[in-house]
Amino acid sequence: MQRKLGLGVLLLAAVWLAGCATGTTTQAPVEDRSTAAPAETAPDGGQPDMGPQALPQDDGVPSGALPGTVPDADLLAKRRVHFAFDSSALDEENRRIVEAHARYLVANPTLTVTLEGHCDERGTREYNLALGERRAQSVERVMRVLGVSANRIRLVSYGEEKPLAPEHNESAWALNRRVEIVYK
Amino acid sequence: MMTITRVRAGLVSCRRRIAFLMLLAPLLWSAPAQAILSIEITQGADVGIPIAIVPFAWQGQGKPPQDLAEIISNDLVRSGRFISIPRKDFVSFPKSEQEVVYKDWRVIKAEALVIGTITPAGPGRFDVQFRLFDVFKQAQLAGLRYTVSASLLRTVAHQIADVVYEKLTGEPGAFNTRIAYVTREAANPKAAAVYRLQIADSDGHNPRTVVRSPEPLLSPAWSPDGKRIAYVSFEDKRSKVYIQNLADGRRELIAEFAGINSAPAWSPDGRRLALALSRDGNAEIYVLDLQTRRLQRLTSDPAIDTEPSWSPDGRYIVFTSDRAGRPQIYRMTADGRQTERLTFEGEYNARASYSPDGRMLTLVSAQQGRFRVATLQLDSGALQVLTDTALDESPTFAPNGRIILYATEVRGRGVLASVSSDGRVRQLYRLEEGDVREPAWSPYNRELQY
Image (cartoon, rainbow over all chains, first blue to last red; front, side, top):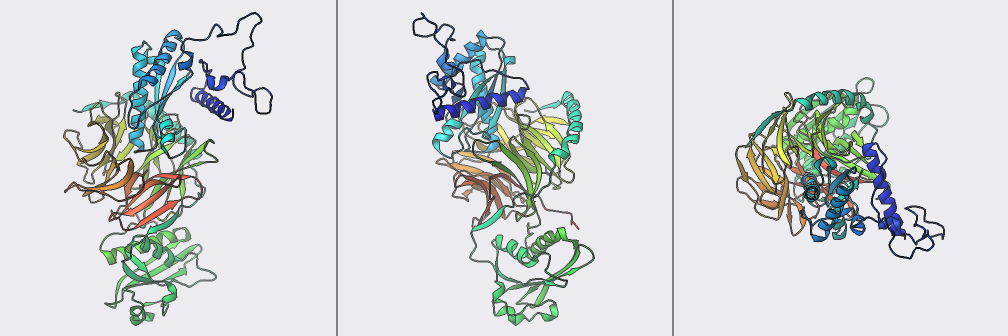
């Protein structure tokens, strides 16, 4: 729970920061299971203090998936794809995530997306700035192939400047080598 | 292949932005005292010239305004080429050449002797005199007099250390120089960070903030005259290159093309700036003429080309490229027409820059996943790794070529470290709080500041 709350705060902060960048209020359009956690309550036993509320079930509706859930919801809930060291290649699992977002963008033509490329701290800062861009471009390429037009995709590279995990070890590095898919 | 483009549209909007930024500059230009980098010698030289530096005789009331002898002694010891004999071993404390008894210095095995005086010379001003003697030849090697305001007393001490260094080693000293670096401070790992581009004296004193930002700052590069710094700022949520005037804090937006704007490097004549831009699709090296704003593209390769650095004679630019699969160092003629690969050892070689004499490069070289500072001799191609840390970055030569300053990580913190170019002397520069990174050593201070 603690961790999920932390993630929620992080995501909210990310959305809030993204709002800063454009000066508009933004709403993440996709379901995110890390904040949706419907059955869970806050540690003090009260209502969860952040994230969407669980949908109440109407009487007479059999339990199961509610109508209205977007296709690919599981994949769309993931808004980060990860890479190997000094690589911008998407493996099968990460490619499927990008493809789901591409289909979502095609189905929702008013949305735009920013692809933020990041690296781990190893290697040099300027090279990593270029590598982060190449990672974002590799995600963009998949989206373009699936029909998302170029003017709906913005690329930015932060290189190694914005790690998710501040530690200096393999698991932090794996987490930090990423492209973040940020909807506007 | 090269392409020449004139960036007309960019120029107009640039001008407008400059005007706006000049209004903003006072907000960004702040000079509150920042935490001083503390320097710790982690590996000293066991050989060096034994020198005795007598405390400068204070001719005024109360306490002397600075312990000049201590500043001079610290400078010389940090170079790794001197051993400073402790004051407690001194037999006498001469104030003038008449009071120097050479025998007193021979018995404590001093080969060189420095004496001096500091005298009030009007409100807030001081007269400093020093003399350097060769104990064995029994001869004066140098004697100079300075009259300065109190704020420049440390500068005078560094200048004296430079004179002593040059007289005794035959090479110019680099004590009266400055370093630029970036600090990052955050209350905790998840809290908002503050980034500062700072400059300080080469011994870490007199830190001053050049620019402060909530977003990352990187790649500071001194202009060859030491008056301006180019750097990359993410203050607009993406990388842009600025040049800032150190005297008045005014700055100019230099590159805000689509894609990344990064890795500024001054040509030795100070008229052009090499940059890594991805405006044409992927990171390539360009040269911007700062006067005419003509932008010339030098590389054309689907790989990453970045981290340009000019040879001191201006004929070549070295850069990092992964065109062969992994990042390696290449050298091209400054017109981009001919390119050759320079590094073949190691899985990752990047961020090369020339030594001031143009004979070698310092770079980051990785083997078995450890990123360390190395030198590459250009005539023989010999690569020598100088450090034993794992996350080294951004090596930069002192202007006399004797010391390489770089960023690394020690116990989870970003610190600066230096290593003499022969690998014998090592030091750590750290802040009490926060990380320090992205060092850049200034060129020589050619103007005497009085």
